[in-house]
Image (cartoon, rainbow over all chains, first blue to last red; front, side, top):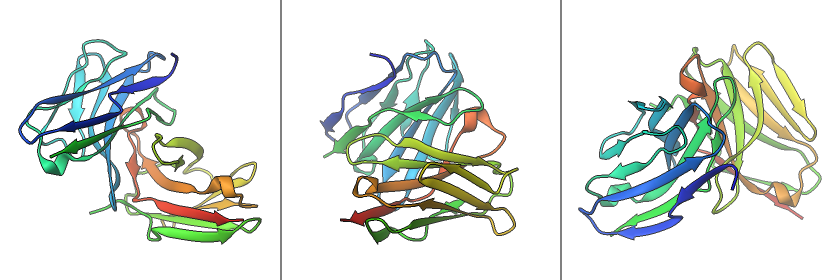
Length: 111
Length: 113
């Protein structure tokens, strides 16, 4: 499917577990982003990537790890999940000069 | 410290009337502003944008106004339709990586038939 996809769409995990959220885009956009959406905070940037093998921290990076070995994939890993990481996570991609296109989101619950 | 603020968490409007959603920002380096619309269980979708060199941009029923001196922008929807009921996010970007966006907290618009 063309566009930007995220998997899983829903995930329940336990405190301390490692979990990886996947993001895949088919446009070969250079830039990819991970945001989290929380009530009252809008969307906050976790990490972003300007190209394969280039990543940088956003506003709220603590507790998260990213990698980008291929242009089309940008997985987000919670190394040891905490309840405060319960949120809806959105992946996005863009080319310079254009607004970001968002994926459908992953709703993560940490028990 | 939130650099982009949407001070109204919700707005209710009658169908056919105008909806005005407001957004304020503090960072003078922002030079591009966007509005996104979000339905439940979906990702945000791009609605309309404006560059800092303009003060108005119109696309059909949607118009965005930018007042740089006041660091304020607004989205006007005329006429409002029930299908416009959604959460609207204001976002801003500066001369940075791939238009990395800073978002406001969102305003939930409810258009009543």
